Image (cartoon, protein in one colour):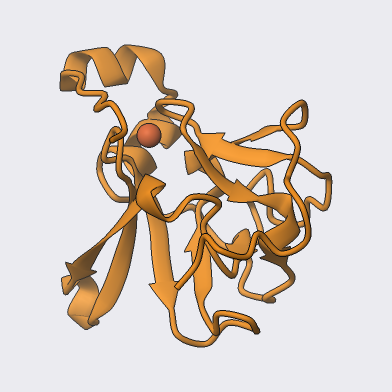
Length: 144
Ligand code: FE
């Protein structure tokens, strides 16, 4: 079981930039094609920017054309959780960090093989750790 990270709004505000806070704690969305990792192809592991939990491998990042970093599966399934999101007159599936409840983005059923999923994630919610191995191949065994 992963350890929980719980902090007050005051603590999050002091640790995150205003833009990060708006996205991570207030479920905001960065404008498309503006995020730090939109076009990044460097190998490594994308951690939660708020708590450091490993979330996505560069091996599963792909060019979706959406304007946000896109992955076809999480690095460790238990490290992300899903939540039904009915805001903005849409029915979407929100993706959050299991450990600290950071808003990451949404998952859509229009991704590539092998999962058919597109994890559409805000750069502001991620931090690329290039010292951590992205793991072998497609990260099989962690997805559904
Ligand atoms: Fe987190």
